[in-house]
Image (tube, rainbow, N blue to C red; front, side):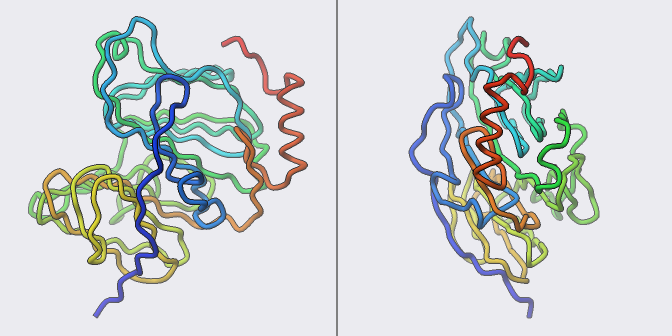
Length: 292
């Protein structure tokens, strides 16, 4: 009989707050639960649950701001987000797309509702994930990956009961398009009632999942929309069974980065001294132009 991986914790996100005027998010970690050391390489998860925005001639969002030492990854489920940064990158992500920005040594960017979406209004549903970089890559040149839904890896589950969308890493031999600095698997699982999927992630990987829709059981534990499920670091299967139709689950699994973390505002480094240096560099204009 196969061993199942233990569910360590199930929790809901804290009350929402606004990032700029365009993103109403619940910060599952590190504010909701302090998983900064526990859940590397994933160090922040902001969830913008489905929310209707009225039409607006002025796109809502968050203005230019700096980052250093990690990557910001935005997942679009409904609505559309536009991105600009001061390295010349510009993109729009639509439902099913992902935007993967490597801040590394330093970048300025801004994110806001895409103009047509803003003008028409509608349901907005997004995740922003921060992925830490190992020390040896924190001062690399910045980078940008615009990943469309057509590029994603796709695995159909038996009997038409669901699909797995592979963003990073691989599932069942199907690879995702995202390039990462450390080993990780990021999946989006869609299941219909009665559908079951079994995941076998490495036991040393930090693993968790957010229920974006519907009700499911994870290794027999009942879970509902907006629940985050943290798994213990041990070998074993994770069996997900859909208890309702239209179950959608966001799965994170990654090899831990076993290094100190010093986080402060938009910077994530290894020491307090490096944080101070990041602030000094930003204040001295070393992140580049603010005019973009």
